[in-house]
Image 1 (cartoon, helix red, strand yellow):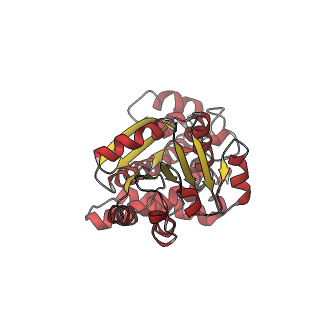
Image 2 (cartoon, rainbow, N blue to C red; image 1 turned 90 degrees about the horizontal axis):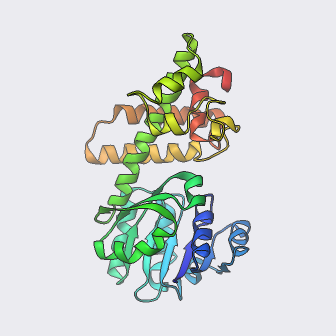
Image 3 (cartoon, rainbow, N blue to C red; image 1 turned 60 degrees about the vertical axis):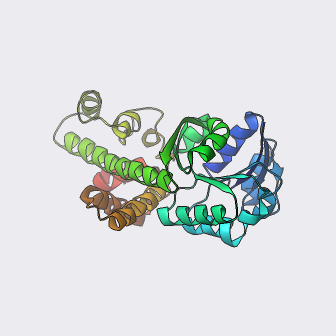
Length: 296
């Protein structure tokens, strides 16, 4: 088993870290929130005093941070790169902009470290159940070195290509997820207003060409699926404000690549409006509240 430093113990990071402990790894953890740290320490982790402390004396460093600026801060300005022992593998599982991911890779490579950008899909449920999908960017050799750690947190581990391409893949995935969430909300609301029951809409569409993972597995109409966020007060899950963050990343990537993404732009505008309505901390499925005023 390995010695792992884990930095960033939020809704996703904490269960990911606990799964590594359950798998037998020795963890040293750090988060700006003492409460978040204590939650993982109670599971058997050692508390670190700083990000550099968390990165020293370990074989792997895993980070799960909110935005690209945090990743640059932790790796470059706070000097995780440099504090880690020679040979340490650096794994950033944050969902961030491609430029920040590549900047961290470049700084790591210049200092003689191996790094992987490895954002995830699967939400809090996937993090808790160790069924996350990891989308990895970096050299094949680093990917193979990191894989035993990723396997203990996820169910599907994919090498997407060179540095930053894990982030590209994640941004594409979440743009499509945001579009699907909005489309499911529009479809369910329109059908009901025209007289079809929500149950009938679900039974037909979930087995027809309009189906999607979001429609089938996280339908936004309360009561259709008993265990999903919509049926549990829209408790996240994956918060709407985080979907908005990822959609904004998709639009920056679209601009950088010269790609026209009208549906991505529409989904971004919709989630921006939803967050402005005050539902940013609710699940992504709460986008239906933007379409169906009776739910808001």
